[in-house]
Length: 223
Image (cartoon, rainbow, N blue to C red; front, side, top):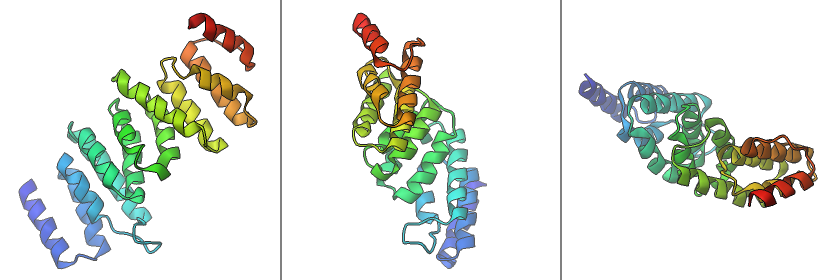
């Protein structure tokens, strides 16, 4: 029974709080029986590596991600719970949790990513890449606000990050971000230009060439 398992987990952790094997086993068991309320506890249990106080070992990262995915699949309320947990989670653990969300292929995943975006600043590239992978939310307001955040990051982003941002914008935008995408057709980085063109074609359904002129004329007529 789940209650007995929880009691056993607590006893084992109390008797060997620093033992890595015990902590990993506890994560795996909670992944099997856990619910939304266990997500924050998983972060606290996860053993850390020697690289720094908040560095997860690779084994711990995999266990944390696997447990999170299992809970997301089992408990419908886990998505909203995770959106509350991520802003107060260290970046290393948050990265593992975000990867689990991104692999869920669930429309609610974008809301979780959006909750993490303003506070997990160092994870911006991962969040943008996962937004592209997950696709749009069923909530148009979330899509619009997330696209606006992506554009705010684009202003100072390095080329590799800018490509991910533009691809995510192309996935989420309803047309409001078109001018910013047209501007990037003249970027000095070829990858950024290609990503901007892909995004414009995705949003518009058109196949104009990479030159800004045709896109500007089209956008003016649409506006």
